[in-house]
Image (cartoon, rainbow, N blue to C red):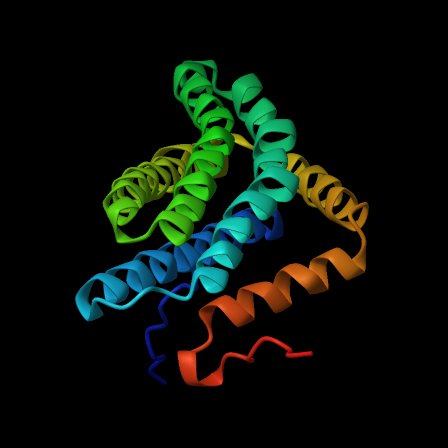
Length: 203
């Protein structure tokens, strides 16, 4: 009797890699929400929701510096350096991007405060900084996803991925469940449609 041809299923993605890609997706979504909110304010001619913009900048500072960059710089990148020395210059550049990103967020926070306190004359300065930051960060994640993570899949062994998964789980558990829930709640608040966002509590 005839057998139907079956398409082989793609190999399962290592959980450690899936976690890093989930971080990327969330960060990209927040970045785009931030750009969209600023663009909408420019089109409407009305001041933006500065509190919402500040929450987005806080997320873009808090999650990479406390979790995501440590996952890459302390756990994933050292394994890739060891297994594929030819990629070291790319990893050096990416780690330098991580360090510059923290000072870039400080600049954006300052520029946002200036816009809020000094008025529309400071809007263009914030928009320029944001455009540069967003383009650099999205490009940074594209390099990781197009060049670094495929190399990791090719060169890291199943044992490497198991050890990375254990290390990532331990690293994130050390920050506590409450921190993870707070980050998730903040992400959901930022990315919710405007009509569904909770209003600030009034006293």
